[in-house]
Length: 176
Image (cartoon, rainbow, N blue to C red; front, side, top):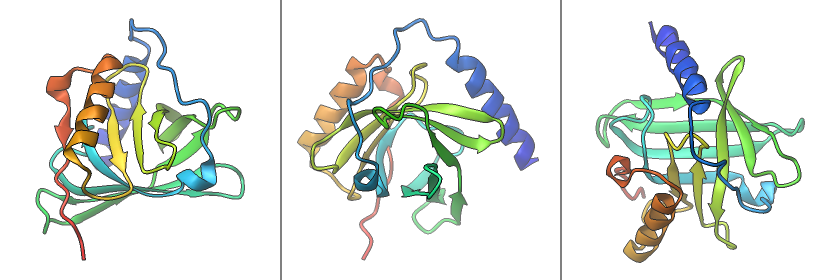
């Protein structure tokens, strides 16, 4: 049953990506992949079905020898004490000039659009978007960020064409 749900969602995401009437979403000019690797806490997002009611969501990246990105997405389901869920999609660099356009593969053969559209110079904050403007992720190297920083990143997401009513803060609890 889980696999059927994943396949149906992946197909739907693939179809919807082609339905966007907005211009292509620009990415950052260049991503230094080794600097980008590591843990990114999801601060806010327009959640996919996997992320609904996710607590402490963290996306971790590691560069593979073949240039692909080993990804681990983990969170607690339903509460901070909920069951830990872990997924391992594979990232593929689609634009090697910028390293900012990826395909993210949860299920073969579909590689979902994944664009690094904001990245601060210290690699502490990032925004990941999609051309179809259906999903977006505001992420940071720490579980909590200043309110002013969040407001600026939220405004950036809105300026990209996302519906602010769909953007949700992810419950993050500072871990010891």
